[in-house]
Image (cartoon, rainbow, N blue to C red; front, side):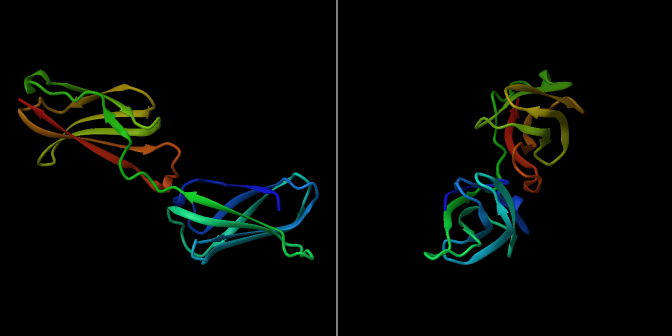
Length: 206
């Protein structure tokens, strides 16, 4: 069976109760119904979807699978078969798909971390940041905290896709000692159910 398949998302978090799979025929004849099934490598079936209508030659159809459980990151087996029965058996195509997990650490780095004399930072604290791995970050919130958890500065940026300065407005001049810079954002391309991810950086001023 000559078909190509495409999942509606590469992330496991996108699939909690259903999974949409596009099946594109490469056959030179119509397909009389399409069944798509999803299995673990151990053979447990996790989902099934059926479209009974005929798919025209070199046409495509979207099949919605009903899932028995929310998906998890890792490898699975996708089996596409034709509903018609043939003398030599039911035509089918098997493919391994790998679902991604959500990022657990924000893919961002500080180009340089500020330091030196605390007295030099009375109103603003600027930190140049850039994403790692050619990622784009959205709704970026950067906050400066004392080690006891007191918020002393905040910066926001709608999108971070290259190098940019995050200018933190300070609520009070910095005092000598240690601080924590916490950057939180959404990783573009991930489903909203992945939520926001953070990364922290230590700061020290004399």
